[in-house]
Length: 416
Picture 1: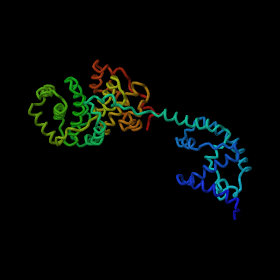
Picture 2 (picture 1 turned 90 degrees about the vertical axis):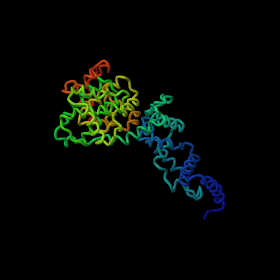
Picture 3 (picture 1 turned 45 degrees about the vertical axis):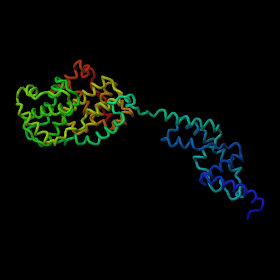
Picture 4 (picture 1 turned 30 degrees about the vertical axis):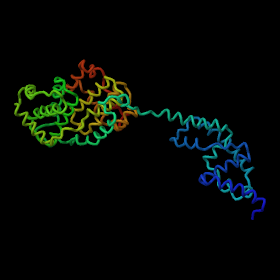
């Protein structure tokens, strides 16, 4: 039983506690009452707030050296504080029925805060750590901000466009082993054809979109239709014609294509193959290729002309290589930009802005990157040098001769 004086003492404390717990959880208030009571009994015990420490601990363990200094003084001060707490520890009846210290021990996280230090100074130090961590986090740049007044940039829905490209790019891809169903042509013949078409495309001064669509049409057609080797060049010419009709303002006439084939085919041959190709592809020509992704990722990389030329050089080398068909158009474009960055600067440079807009992390690019670096290494000495000759001209800033392949990307330290 509790005497009357004790009841008079308990009532105001209990009433005050009930009023405060109407807007707070009882468990949290018990801990605050505990720290307030200890501060009243012994002014040497400092009840600092726990929130800065909790926040820092949640920051992936980034406690810094300031936290280590606090820990070093903890061992010498905690034992003394605990002894003082035992000396002044109240009995169960002194505070009525609310027994905080006897019934609930101080958690270790809170116990570390009872040290001989300035609580305001400690809180400032913890906040400084949080601010430093936030400042080190690299921001994602708004790459479309300066195009807000450019109606051709379609800033309002450019993100929706590329989201649609990412969803539909799988229809641009072909089986990586489709050449196995061809009985009269090989992947080397395909490489010779595309290397030749890249030179034709350059001489006709056609748009970049036309080249990538031409190669896409060739691969999609060959994956569905068997072709004899004497018709393979005709397939390439017709694919170029269709791509020009889709992308170009001024389309080469059929007679021009007959001439560049050294009159190996007639006009009727070209028109007949055009019908066969369109029917085989079900007139589905509008599919995303590597080029729109390349433009977007170069913009995200805040590229200069030399980076654009080198990335274009690398991705056109990938067009010739049959093994590169295993990678999606967006992955090839991202890899070309990443490899070009590393080649120019000599170190890895794939920031959060590039990762955000490409949807690829650096680790996801490394496998394709190694293959692209190997293509760069042998570009000048390979039998097919059309791409290397193209980018060794003044038109492209002699970019193929200016930079050596990024050998460090294929070293052991970059193996997956």
